[in-house]
Image (cartoon, rainbow, N blue to C red; front, side, top):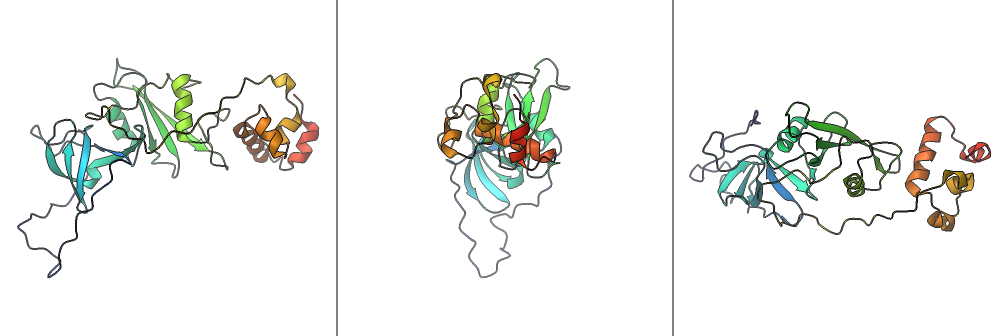
Length: 265
């Protein structure tokens, strides 16, 4: 399954330790309640491999560059290089995978149109990308990628007109309506052997949905008011107010009090 990253040969248990006269450190037992670990490559390479790409792994111990794991799909145990795996949070947030690997995972069997994952961008440091499988009839162009940007207040967005306080809220929204995406988000990228396994560390943030705005009734005080009580009761969400403020800032209209005089609905 594609080129595999190079890794040094694992030291055999019968080889002398380089730490002379020192006891080897105890293996670190990982807490798998926080995340799920997924294989990114077949290991060992070849047909007769113990671990296959896309399988959920139970991490038995961390021994540095090598992890001892067992496959949740087959029960097979093996040592595997630590950079042959990825941590997955909330079932859909994959840590440290490339665009190409995201496409490979989404094109595995069991994934359908609408299968998705979120990964860190390799070309724009500190940002995320949403990768969505949009077709099951062709592998070419079957996965679409969307960059997830952030406002100065930390809110996330794909389209500037829709902002979310967390990635979980972004996913929840696009699972209900596509709003410009190639298709509705349906199921997270399939992980072999992960059925009925809880992978979320806590309850997802509660999304507060406000009534649809009638823009004819919106005035400047609803956007620029500094009254905390009025903000909480306002139909204009905090995210939308921040988006408008950020837009005015980027267009050199830094004095928002002056903007209040010119605001027209």
